[in-house]
Image 1: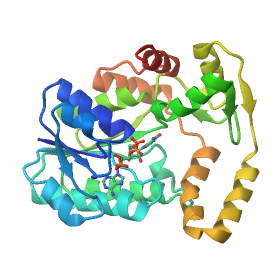
Image 2 (image 1 turned 180 degrees about the vertical axis):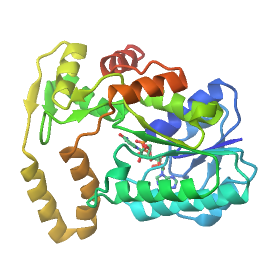
Image 3 (image 1 turned 90 degrees about the vertical axis):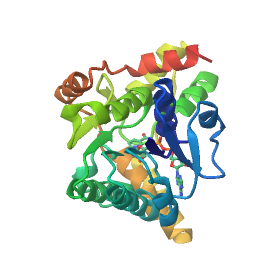
Length: 292
Ligand SMILES: NC(=O)c1ccc[n+]([C@@H]2O[C@H](COP(=O)([O-])OP(=O)(O)OC[C@H]3O[C@@H](n4cnc5c(N)ncnc54)[C@H](OP(=O)(O)O)[C@@H]3O)[C@@H](O)[C@H]2O)c1
């Protein structure tokens, strides 16, 4: 049995779909408020729980052979990105789980102090490595699926909002490729107890993204490019009313102000380890919109 946490998220949903396409048994951890109907229709066993509850994690991990942890918090890094993963790992040890796949983030090891999520990811990585479990840690760059709402706004208006430096580099990864790699990590001997940076086929600048949208949707881009200090000013203002939200925005600030890309050598190594050809962003978008 595979346990997938974050099963209703962009990545988790794709992992559950692919596991079910291979007719593998899946327990999908979901909240009662989540949209899990599609996963149930595909034959996943839905486990209703809350990752903030250790007893739910203890129940969900019973009789499980493999765990793929894909959940993410948005704003509650302490409880969801950190504590829920520590509880998952402890219960994985107690239940003699054979392999634990953890979705971290590219740059988790760079010590970004402004981002609670990056710090949580790194602490979980360290805990997992020391746990004695067989593991694979994947450190992806930004997901292509994150860009879909921006692509749709671009398709309808031509407008693209680019905050900060357009020259910063990124390796947007196809969320479907990442799902494939997460599953293959369990059966690929050379992925055991390894950490992999995961990016797409090409190194892009953030300014390339509206140009790719322009190619896909055949329209001229109108790029609105406010400088980062405007975001910082807004964040400081928010801090006066809601200090917790100001802290959470630290992760977005980290993402906007730094480069997150994989080197060509890292992508070649990834492709050869998992026998996969990473998808270009334009191809991901064309594939996605051709199905609609
Ligand atoms: N998106 C990116 O660009 C990116 C880049 C690098 C790394 N990552 C990492 O990759 C992973 C997957 O990201 P994603 O974008 O697919 O995530 P996502 O779409 O934001 O989904 C988050 C998932 O976590 C679940 N969740 C949150 N709190 C929960 C709780 N208390 N109990 C049970 N489930 C809970 C959500 O359930 P609901 O459906 O109920 O909300 C959802 O299924 C995350 O660990 C993220 O940090 C993401």
